[in-house]
Amino acid sequence: MRAGTAEITPVNLALRPEAMEERRALEKDFPDAGFYVDQFLAHTGGSPETFQPVEFRPYTFAIAKLSGSIAEDRDALGRFAADAASLQRMGLILDVMHGAGKQITAKLSAAGFRSETRPDGTRITPGEHMWAVYESLEEVNAAICEAIVKEGGVVEPVKDIFTAALSDPDDRGSVEQITKVDTGQIEEASLAGKIPVCRPDGHTVLPNGEVAATNINADIAGRALAAALKVLKYISLTDTPIVERGIPQRNLTAEKAAAMIDSGDIHGGAVVKVREGIELVRQGVHQVVIVQFDHFRNELYQPEGSANMGTNIHE
Picture 1: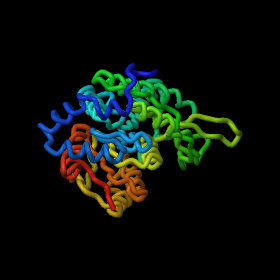
Picture 2: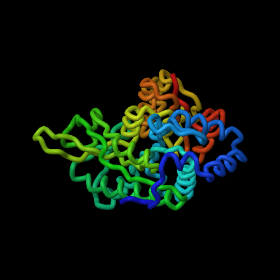
Picture 3: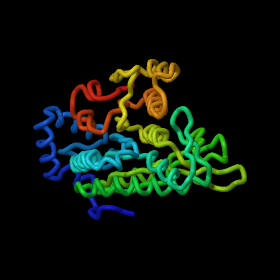
Picture 4: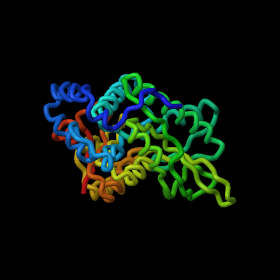
């Protein structure tokens, strides 16, 4: 599926009059928004006034990793879609990575299958469960694409860009390592002014030589993609804050975050989110944050960013 019909070039994205209208509207609520937009554009090689085709790297701005639950919250999805489309009109292409955990569990349960996860929240996925993975990812991807298009954005659905090594060939979710990330689809879409909406599925080569589909946790896939693209920001959007003994954690050093995982203070599905964030920080990604859906704009356009809204992971 290719949603959206208009072909938007990077030059037009940076220079269109509506880009300045977006900035002025943002600055009414966020006085520093124009400053941050310029910073983001400079990182990609673009600006509202000038354009350097050889240096333009729109795909390096930011990755927003979405929990699949956003597809079930129409209001939250609509707000995110509006922000993604607004960024696009200002010349900033947000790479979107999404999961579909809740949807997979629901489909398996409805079909009489038991869904099992590991302590870190990653899913145990026998080959006979892959149909639920396919269907769920397709549905969530379509919902996100449609929401962005409704807000005037232009999107490009992206799938199967990861090659993975499995620790157990019978468990398609036992991703030991992502060995390759094919960034070509994302780079091409971004350079054409489209928002890549990526699924965390991929493939592996089984011991018998068969190429088989894999179910990669979206946090693991998002981290691998962020490292491959060398993005400025990695923003994990979720409906659940990171807490320690019931207290929301705003700023975490990588060392403290790792200790909280070891102690069990961070547990369940939060483990993989934080663990992958730690890895990104250590790989040099400038900003890694875990923030609830409603605070996405605050993270982008306020000086304190996630300091008051979510969890900032840093060295």
